Image (cartoon, rainbow, N blue to C red):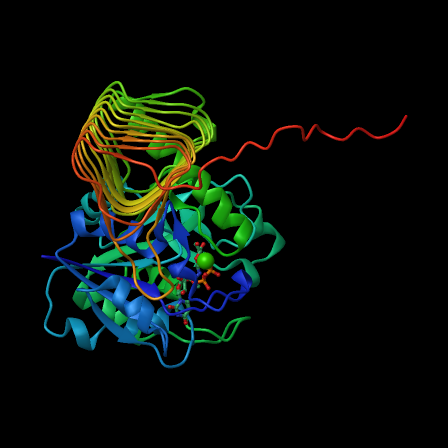
Length: 432
Ligand code: UD1
Ligand code: CA
């Protein structure tokens, strides 16, 4: 049995935010959820240490246990708060920082493996800029102590090997060391990192496992959040391409943590995927499109400049063209909505053609209403469909119609003012 304690009680002052730091999103989900995904793969139990009044964070980490650190007295003090929740637990306990969410499952496995050969194992890195990180003081393979940046001498600050903030030891050792922490340091805090000196002082083996900075960097500011986002995006793009999707200009495509792209999907430049998108094999997502919580079936073509909003399903081989917005709409196989339309709360049958400028008037100011368009229907350009309304299979609406009543199958509906031509009324020209 292995347990993990995740420290997330800090507000993250340097983020200058109204939300707890670990709730800031990477690829569309809170950073803490990224960390949990890796942790859940390696640890059997998880306890998250939160601050007072962080209900949204507690919901975000459910169903894992949470404990509240009422006073923010340092990382060691925070870890100690998890002791009652792990009462009687025997086995290894790791402590992780909620603001280091890029760590991978593979690296966590290396850590727990290293723990099997040492009494205390921790993750270390050699960051390009070590400022702010705790430095590792070693003697051969043994780690003697960690000195926090704030407390370090010039000489110690020159050490390149830094603490990534993940330690792992048997529960009985860890909680003993945590219980003995003192706060007589520059920041007046109980440092988790002091467990290293305790273990070393007891003559126990302490080992560091090195991993790349890209996985272990901490997020303390908006700028660091952006660096972490870039890392997450790079991984997601790489996985999408490994899975058989073509990203024509990868760096310009923004993916969500759960975006699913099938084989031979082609994504053109500047496409944004918000969470919840599935794109099936062979579909094309053309430039400058925005998709959220929707399904694009095989061989469909979306965009350029299309917007698919939540609850939309675009059928096999269907086309959604420029400046077309679909919301909670099911577009049948082979149907086309190619230009300048808003289709919301609608079902569009197979092979139907939605003319340029068609609008579903789905909202009466209080309620949303549905529009149903039958298979093979032809909706003339600039039709306004005032919902609730139904257009039958293979029916036609004349261009510019305002359709307020159901149209039977195969009927032609014309609902517009008749044109009047007045003779002898030439256009007036300005006198030269
Ligand atoms: C910490 C480490 C440092 C390491 C760096 C890696 C300590 C003393 N220092 O520094 O050695 O190089 O992380 O990124 O551990 N937290 C609480 N309660 C507290 C204090 C912090 O829950 O009382 C949480 C924070 O929410 C955060 C994490 O612990 O998620 C780390 O705290 P932070 O203040 O960011 O530590 P650093 O100064 O970055
Ligand atoms: Ca930090």
